[in-house]
Length: 253
Image 1 (spheres, rainbow, N blue to C red):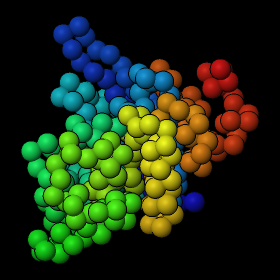
Image 2: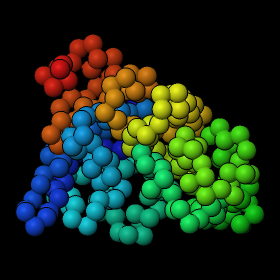
Image 3: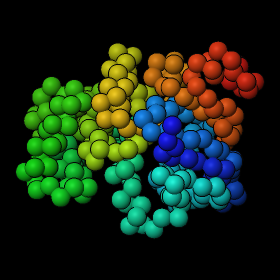
């Protein structure tokens, strides 16, 4: 299989008045084209910091100190701001667990979607609006025109997460990073969102990186998984192998 994204020997630290805290220590894994890849670990294991580093979305006190992040063979860490903008939200998109914080409360869903679509395409405002409606319908929102006029707080948690997925899909990304996308949702809505991601992955042939602390979610959706603990990737492989024959003591327990 073709390696689309490869993380090698990644080291990431946070710097505060109290000194350095190593969040990611020599982590590495590879994502193949069309892969549904899980990164699983407890809170503080480094999984979200690792994936945010792929798009260089760390806070100002977060520094990548070593390693490579190769996207289609080129190191993202060496890209300038303009090159990074082309990749971020274009070729690699990300959805977050807290959709209410991620969506701007003072703008309607439609206005932000149109702005995002036009940023990555040459569409007119009318064309972008039509595309936004199509995307909302594609992620299972039954009245997309009404949702276009809604503010984030007027939508349920499940609908907001669908909006986030629609926005991420607007540029037809090659990789979609989903950071705990079902954490704040009830069990029924969680299942709907996971099935939606599976459907979109199959229809569009993109790769998905699913970050979660829930092994059950990984078992339902992923082909391959990396297990993180204490900033390290302690195990990586096919989901069946990891579940049936875990090699590392952390995974076994």
